[in-house]
Image 1 (tube, rainbow, N blue to C red):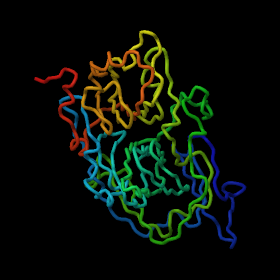
Image 2 (cartoon, rainbow, N blue to C red; image 1 turned 135 degrees about the vertical axis):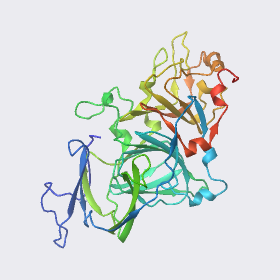
Image 3 (cartoon, rainbow, N blue to C red; image 1 turned 90 degrees about the vertical axis):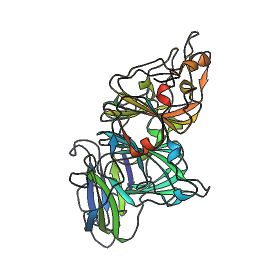
Length: 405
């Protein structure tokens, strides 16, 4: 996103000689989007960022999907995927991800982890990782991020990084990973034509937390797992994996500047937009990408017209599949459906959906909803991943009628 940052040592003039104390040259890397016609950052390495000494196939986790056919709404219980007892201690936040839902534009995965991840780079698209619970340090080529519950961790495409969960409390870090095949940005309607957040936006630059100093590591023959586009016998949906070994440690950037970098944004800093009558879902939007958007439903004052119905009306978002992840609080519209915290609901395009009938009268007169949910709306149909199939509640589709044929 177009919000300029500078960290560490920089040359006075870009693309000119920049030497260390011994007279050796620093190595520039221009990391840019859309053929260097959009946001970019300029990084200064101690070593040569292209120097690899090995490359081999990395077999990706199961990314296969199954169509939602015949068409039904679905309820998925994510915590059924949490490993039993303490076996999560051997699971890491990258290779331990299990695919819940996906299509050609986005993959939604879930992981409960306690092990430090390998060094990792997603060359397919940006990642938006929501921290459901726990704390972690995210080491990146740009510097270090500290991730806490409620954080969205935005990691641009091709950013080398690794996750270090903090499990001193005896519990795993639980992550909801939204992996794009594109870039993930704040919605354009929140930004000026030059990229500054506008006054009506529900968050602003002060709420974004980027690395503030370089993170330098020594080492040789460092392996980085790379997810990238490809074909052939190892491809799953046009995605393949490679383990590349670098001659020197990729975390050797002594300084960088620009408008492309990883950052965190905590959902508690989102300022809900409310009205006298029920507001449509776009007021909850937090990010956008190609063919999908991310929204969050936060604790908020609700509709204050004297005859308002605070829970959502039945609706047909005719262009989208809607995925809701119920994170915290008490989600009013789903009372009586079997949905609880840690649940996902999938309401596909072609199906009118909304509140449970019993939730309508129960919500009348409410002044405040204490609820937190993360929503992904996709403009191509979502299919079920192996993890989604493994944690499904088969009774949900019939919960509005209370019976099935």
